[in-house]
Length: 291
Image 1 (cartoon, one colour):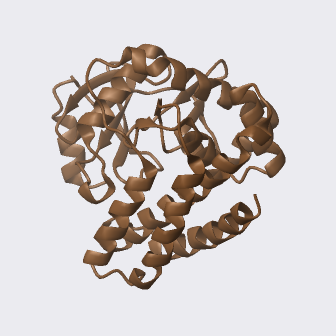
Image 2: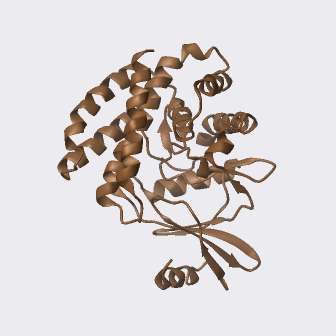
């Protein structure tokens, strides 16, 4: 948090006398700050478009507004290019262990179900689609053009991707969050909240479910219970398509990290993150081959 950032926040027109600007954790594609003003607390998200990751801030704003109106996300207070100001929630940020807690997991699946069923009706403008197979192909093309150190691994990954897309088959399209990390789920003691809509858009519901599982190390038993709760049917009916989407989600995270190795200016060990996700992807592909 530099003096320039503090000064930029202090000059935002939505504030009268901002005080106690504090850096918040998280945020691999933006800077998050908490600001006190007029006895209220706010979150300021600073971040421009990120072409290499398909992040368009107008899309994040549209979805943040809709999610706020629908009651899933905090209120949007102010926006301008590169800036999004939200109400601050006095809530616990989940950890992966919190997500795996059986009671919490049922609540999370219930929230995701409502998001998928209800959020589109609150949109007031078009938003992007997030088709993970095309996202992954776009990452691979950019990595090849950028001379990534992982270029030799890309052809095999793309061949696997074709097989995974075929296995997913037809989908029912919903508005997905598409980034269900534990840190994007908050609990105020009464209800759950979902934050950070920068990757949100139209997608298969399986991607959110697969992302929730892979990001939070759910067991197979938990995954099957999640599918049964979400679809209200035998999880075996969805297992192969779900397993394919889980591999696709892990591939996307791997390609995202490979791309961040080249383009990100944040102080994050993306080399290690890429290696971690490649190992998880290899394991998931082995499991998918047995479905």
